[in-house]
Image (cartoon, rainbow, N blue to C red; front, top):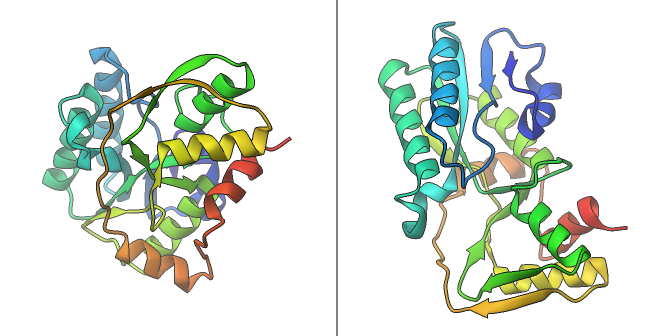
Length: 228
């Protein structure tokens, strides 16, 4: 059973749509810069109703809870609150923290959609020189999560499902320039943060299904969704 119809829900559908013993909660606030309290309240209400179904529940949180610069944002505080809510009410759950998920979505708030639009249309933007980001294909997320749930590797715990390496944002912008064949119009800013993610469990799941994260993973990912 899947709640939601966005990028994650669609990717998870082939793996979980017909399962009646697992509830995948893939509906929530999609903009990490959201400030409206009612949007967060809506997700909490939906989650509380979902937990009443008493099914094994998969909840998607965010790796940004590890980012010291984002610790006090409404989005991160909300994600932490939802993690606490779930763990307090049920042991039949898996909390999956995700980084920047890449896929075909009209959501303008994803990092890669934002960079693609700014560079394609020549719009100016700020480039944080010390920022790093972790990117992963939504299809890889769904496959890894299915492996984790099928084999009960993530039961009752919080698991980072992410790429085994992050990339500097300046390098990511350069990758977009390569793929799009256009120069980006940015102003450099001496800002940003870099934090490590423990992905041992998710990488074990990736290896089990033959999924590799080689040195060309990021450029191939950008080509897949943004190449012309």
